[in-house]
Length: 269
Ligand code: UDP
Image (spheres, rainbow, N blue to C red):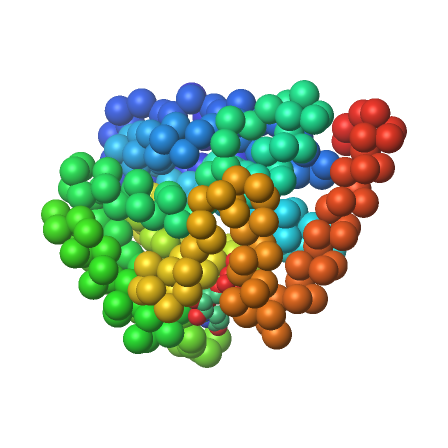
């Protein structure tokens, strides 16, 4: 079986079986795999156990809109082994356009569920991103939550270009199979794109501000806020100075493009 885009085979490892190709649907200009969180975790664990390599993108409304003006980000996402929808508005829109996605698949839920499975199946993880203090606390908290989890290493995400090679080497030499990178969008995607062939891990995921939440310095929106599609507003209220422009621009673009597509009655627009 030929590997899909974004997947590569590690020739040193026997292939037990390759994960089946996910069912991909289109929303505006973005492609999404119609998987639930638990299906995504199953898929990721099968990828790892079969010795293949691939990265997974969790795309929210802001990222979907950024992909229109950032070609590099768009190309990176399009080559992902798996692309999941991270946000309730994307799920609603998928239903309006008759290409239903089962549920939101968020970076932070994936960290939780993948760490639980990694602990059970003896898969090592590496955490890269956030400040030194935050990543240390996040690693401690994850270890406390999953005592059997093998954290092969962790490091902060504040480094100069000429220090990237050392970070990559540390990840590779740690022997980790899963890498969570939390340096913000699109910084974390650029890091993965530039270093993918050298990182050695089977699976990488960009997880944005998740380590801040795991370390307890930021709070996740209550479930009902997530369900009514206002997680972005909750984040905005926590960091208004940094995020107001991002959400004003990307949310307006998204609403406009969805209405236009509805009026035109067909996708893609
Ligand atoms: N960050 C980092 N290196 C940088 C800039 C940011 O590791 O050079 C970290 C920051 O400490 C925080 C996360 O990246 O933990 C920022 O995530 P953000 O909330 O911006 O995620 P996004 O919304 O962009 O996915």
